[in-house]
Amino acid sequence: MGKVDDIQKMKKIKIWLKWIFIPLIYSIFHKIDMSDIEKKAKEFALKSHRKTNHKYDIFPYKLHLNIVVWFARKYIYLIPIDKRNNVLAACWCHDTIEDCRVTYNDIKNTLGDDVANIVYALTNDKGKNRKERAGDNYYKGISIWYL
Image (cartoon, rainbow, N blue to C red):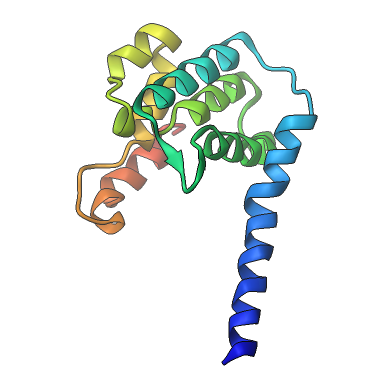
């Protein structure tokens, strides 16, 4: 039984290193040139989440946002060049409507139509569990945004 526990602990450490530690270190030490819209979105999202005192497990919620943006940057080459800044801005704000008492119009007025539409597409429906919250409409909204 002890060996199984050790293996599970090692798996958790490996996951923590891969998904949290590396993006965190990257975001701290790697200075990234951000567009004005992305800077504004980052500030808006951090302020919104700070007001609601959200945590990402035991960490400040900004860690989750940095991880999301880190992964988005890793695959941003897949997005048309003229839409990249808005996609990165939306990554910062992706949880604001469902978690922060922020409305679609708040985002639209602050960051524009495109960012607001992406954030809205990424907003989960109400539901008791992940399956109910991220139903067919959630994935449909994401998939049609660029079509």
